Image 1 (spheres, rainbow, N blue to C red):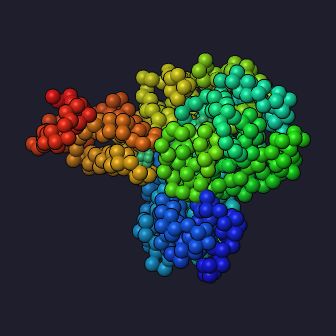
Image 2 (image 1 turned 60 degrees about the horizontal axis):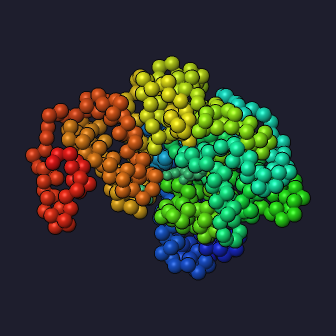
Length: 597
Ligand SMILES: Cc1cc2nc3c(=O)[nH]c(=O)nc-3n(C[C@H](O)[C@H](O)[C@H](O)COP(=O)(O)O)c2cc1C
Ligand code: SF4
């Protein structure tokens, strides 16, 4: 094991001693030691001249940072519902048995640890595992045996069969974005001809809305950033892609990254930004080197750096920061905190990032797909872009399709496509329900398959998980509830407690110990989460439960011990004194929202 101090000094020096790089520094120190030994945290704090408590706070926040020793081989099974449907849990148990380890605990000799992790963005080729951060797909018992052998013999990871690490794009349907070949530099050249104001006008005409989920109009965001006062504006590409069931950004970054980076430069041209940052989720670590190589090529071709394409004063460059396993960091203000080297706690808004973002500078945060789409607008014009899709949802949308279908993968459709059409194309003949938009999205039952993918009907950041008639909607919702309880950052009480309560109710129901009153309590927790959470994670955490409870109620009721049972103890009545003391008797002060009064 190398000595701690020289390693830390080297890593910190590589980052110019900049405390805002704390997360990147910890990731790199951990790559040397396999975990973060206590003296390394002390050394990082000393070298950066920040309190040790801050370093410890960051090290403790991210699931891919390990302040205590773990196995030299860290094996993490992707635990999305689609992985589970493909048998991931049984494969995990088989590997644990073969290697004599318990899930979550390193082996006594420190060789290996095996655990689960949230969705790894490989649902089209699951079950997937990460071994020391490298993704292995299409796991089966044969591969589990091979992995066990390689671990037992302590074979270094770079000598494992290359076939293990092959990741496919699985693009099944191409349209405006994925169809034509792209000539690097062409989109930037077209925008330069228009000038910043003319280019922004094309963005307005396009009606492009963000593809990261919320669907905010992109040109409004860019214009606000351009008009904001402040030095050195920033363009951030949100490549956190943590929503269970979403993997389209992975494919864009693997095979169309020149469009994404050029889209960032187009955003910089419109806003006057000089700094670009990509926040790449830790699960996509395997993309880091190829992406850095592409950035180098773009610099060489005059598409990044000073005087881009010879335009005096157009200076812009891009750096890539890694995430470390925290879904909440996809939320744009948590992402900015993380980029600044802090815990990923969402900020209070306003101020919005466009006026005070990364290090207090005006910042545009856009999704990977949004940025890639801007190259189409520059090349074809805003009006042509707006001619496809629907009135409020222009252009095309990439869907990440997984679950019970013959052809999982990436499908590009003009907005407005029906769910029925998508199901036909991906070979899902027996679909019972579709979860659109991931765990925080919407559950679509069979009678709704005529609905359309569009912001005015069924919005989505891209996840489209199919479940056939053999699946139990309750199990699906329970998996998502566990996900949210695990990913809640714990900053605000309604979400920290609400997601834990929800998990408790779902586990109780799964054990057959639930009663009708638990279903009513779930609705109460939903109201708490929706109305009192600090960020979108908490406010959408109960969506899958509430949706399935409304649309698939028998799946819950058959788990109830008794349909009639009412608790003898009336908690709401018992809280009457507390209400009197606080002078509150409004509906929100009652557990049932005041309906029982
Ligand atoms: C809990 C949570 C997670 C999110 N994760 C992502 C993500 O992984 N990728 C993304 O682009 N947007 C994500 N978002 C949305 C971002 O906050 C933000 O709206 C988006 O990056 C803006 O880009 P756009 O306008 O191009 O869509 C998330 C939001 C929440 C509340
Ligand atoms: S809602 Fe949840 S994830 Fe968001 S800030 Fe509160 S605790 Fe954190």
